[in-house]
Length: 157
Image (cartoon, rainbow, N blue to C red; front, side, top):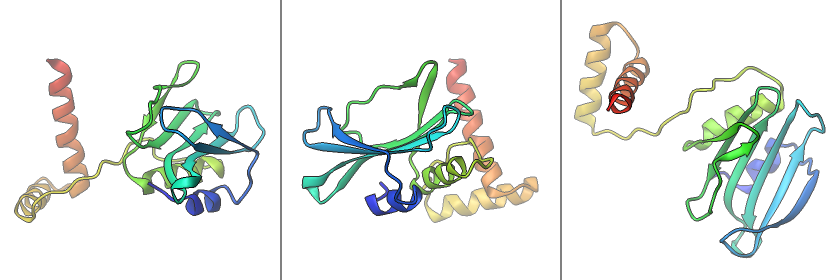
């Protein structure tokens, strides 16, 4: 989970709102940074001031493109609905959140794909690299293809 300092750097220390955050976890606080535009962005962090500022959730909303991303601690009860018909896209990789949030804040294009952490044994990683080489594609593309195939197979069930 990103830190409060990383989040403050991300929003350039521009806080537009702060309040208690009511959830199943007690004593949480929320800070929000919003650029003030209906088709702009907002970024939020939920943390526990009494727990050495432990971060429970970071969110960024791209109102222009109706996209909402977050990294959330499983301890929080969380709704999947961000607003209207927009649902949260839960991210697992902090850098993925930071890349998307920076681009949204700077009104830049960004990759809407979700990064997935992948920890494989060396022998399996080697075999994947050989397979990617044989197919003349990158390792990343091979893994993406394999994951898509698996997801499609599960969806077909």
